[in-house]
Image: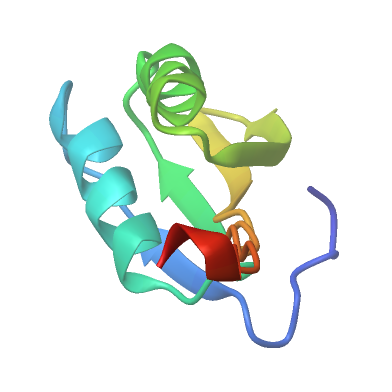
Length: 95
């Protein structure tokens, strides 16, 4: 994650928090973002590099990129776009 932050990407600084808090806070922040939005996460807990991507897989969030910068873990996460509504025309005979 060099200098590729999106202008509208929120940065979530989780330095100083230990497992499981970084994954829980990242999940809460992703649920508050709009569908399709990115979230840049910075953490210094070494387990965040494992726990946050695992949470994303369980919750259907996307890990766009991940990397280390010394002791820091940097992740770009994305909340997927909302699935299209399942709109089916009603059968007039069913009424």
